[in-house]
Amino acid sequence: MAQAPVAGGPAENPYETALAQLDAAAERLHLSDGMREVLRRPRRELSVSLPVKMDDGSLRVFTGFRVHHNDARGPVKGGLRYSPYVDIDEVRALAMWMTWKSAIAGLPYGGAKGGIIVEPRDLSIGELERLTRRFASEIGILIGPERDVPAPDLGTDEQVMAWIMDTYSVQHGHSAPAVVTGKPLSIGGSAGRRDATGRGVLFVTQEACARLGRPLEGASVAIQGFGKVGSVAAKLLDDAGAKVVALSDSRGGIYNPDGLGDIDAILAHKHESGLLPEDHPGAHITNEELLELPVDILIPAALEGQICGDNVGRVQAKLIVEAANGPMTQDADLALAERGVPVVPDILANSGGVIVSYFEWVQDIQSFFWEERTVNSRLERIIKRSFQEVADVQDRDGTSMRDAAYTLAVARVVEAIEARGIFP
Ligand code: NAD
Image 1 (tube, rainbow, N blue to C red):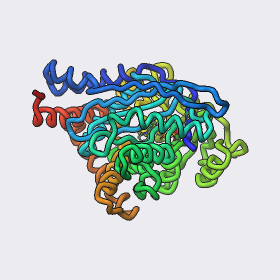
Image 2 (cartoon, rainbow, N blue to C red):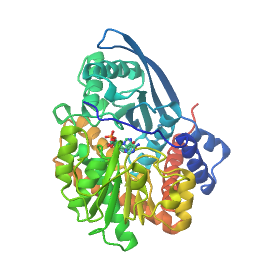
Image 3 (spheres, rainbow, N blue to C red):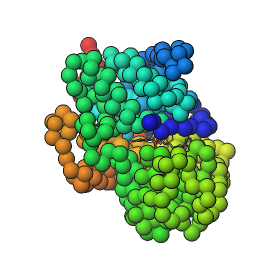
């Protein structure tokens, strides 16, 4: 059953944020007006209406999107989001961020994203399956192992990917595991994919601490969002010796300045009941309060626009690692940069997911599967190399880490566009 829940939509239009970030990078790279225009516009967008027979016999029509931002570096890659807050601008922003993320990691991919406007918790498993299969069929004109490879995101999971893989395979008359990543292991998923984004967050946090000369061991950590990414990051950071003091989901959070203790027990409770433990020693806090805690490391791992102009003045964290996509608005980003608070940007910090999705795709195409330790060590090598390459640009240019990441990513995409030339 897909996880989901989303309370409170993004605080500003994420596409405007994405465009402003691109414009700033284009300025630093002295790009021509024409090249800026190429990069600002998605290559193609598809909007689909999805009629679904509901369990009570009624018919409902949902809306879905798939956007390809840029495919100069290879087939497009990007997640599918099921949330009531999905809209075309959010999908456009997320597609553009995927282009940059893949470029930073050096993957042979462009960027895409998709989504359906739906609260998946409100649907039965049968309704969710029919909705997903209809969506897979409608976007079938875009997806394919050599063209566009979706993956899970907010509100979608391995089961949703399995339905998409099956629908595509049935319609093409052969099994096509490489059409999606983040699948169950039984149908060509990769060992280590489930934990990959959270594991990548651990690796970049280790690198950031080393670069700042601060120990990760004993560092206090607050994590907003306890889903596929936040829960794994919490567990792995705890295992690495950090002190996880606060966690939250859409309903609110728990906080104990002495540490929350056994993360496995909290995870088990969440899996069983869908909730964080109510009787956990420590305080119950809101998501807003979690962002303002006096911690060494803050990891937003839920939605866009959570740290914004309204609350940035009260954010006390000494390091922010963006596990979510776009968790910070531009004004908040500027305010933190002025205060000298280091931020590891999303397009680097959460790239573990797409890196291991790439491994999954490669394994599916070769029909040759790797052991989990091979997956994890290759992930570590690639994401730490990416971190170092971004850090080198930061040192060279004297910018924030986000600006350095954009400079690197946009330059790589432009290089590919120029190498291929503009058709015809
Ligand atoms: P998920 O659906 O598994 O989990 C989302 C979590 O956020 C849940 O715990 C939910 O309760 C919580 N949440 C929802 N609304 C909230 C709110 N208003 N305040 C606090 N918490 C709230 O999703 P996920 O896959 O873990 O994705 C989380 C973020 O990470 C998203 O921004 C996503 O785009 C990004 N991301 C995910 C992946 C991946 O591999 N899944 C990869 C890269 C980036």
